[in-house]
Image (cartoon, rainbow, N blue to C red):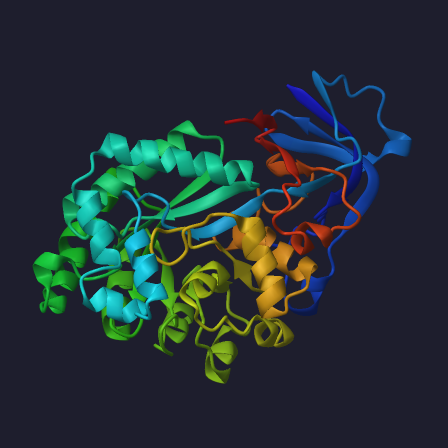
Length: 414
């Protein structure tokens, strides 16, 4: 099936370079084309150009008039926890009353609270709740998403989460990547016995995950009060032995050594990075590891934001992701994430969009197929109402400009 989108006011995010990421000062250059058309052939982008030279022989099966609105490549959200049971608004009130993230966790809340709820929830109900969130993020412009386990904290419940993620992957047009995060916290049954829990992750959970082929990546919460650098290294290396590439939660609560470990272990990304020093930035220079920032979490928790400006000025590529989860970032709206990056982290809109699109795809190993308007890439994009500029999408960050979403060359509807 061929789909022609015509009368596009501005085609945004064009890239013919073949690069897998955008770094440093290049992040502030976003290629566009005014008064344009775009042709999809099946699931792929086939061609695009100016309306002054629309090909007359494209023989499109469907023609969509963009009406002067803009066309953007879909967001690529490389860090979410959107498979979870219920919600945690009581902890929202606890935060308002002055408790910190760490204090809530010490009182048995946080991740352990979600683990208790997930244990009591059926796989079918988890899938139903997660599909509501998947529909929500797709309609808000996301076309590729990574989803982590980590609210199970037992072998059976971690596998239950990952099976739900596999089912989502098999039933939605979004591109989905799965991450095993058994080392998100120490399960209640192992309180005070963290070393034994790490043994469980390595000797039982990881082999079980690998036997069923349930994950693409392995992740560890390497931070103050969670898992040490040594424990993280052991888990990542055991994951690599089972064919899972590393990702790391690093430096959210303290400078943990997780960034340097991630680089040393060839991690695809290191995520959070609210606490970053010169040594961490230097470690990332020239590395393939993508530093990924989650401003929605900093916003919701009232924490300091990652030093995006310092990282970009140092020549690094950076990615943005939502961290969609029930406790510290209950939103998967990547447009809001990009707006926060501009408003609170001094990233230009062009930088924020590159970070949320091509660099987000890179943080999932998906740059070859997603993250830009490129002939041959998967036809994931969204159409907006007419706007005065590209920057206006993030400037007027709550106005509902996104009108239509297309995934794999077909319109996505609820």
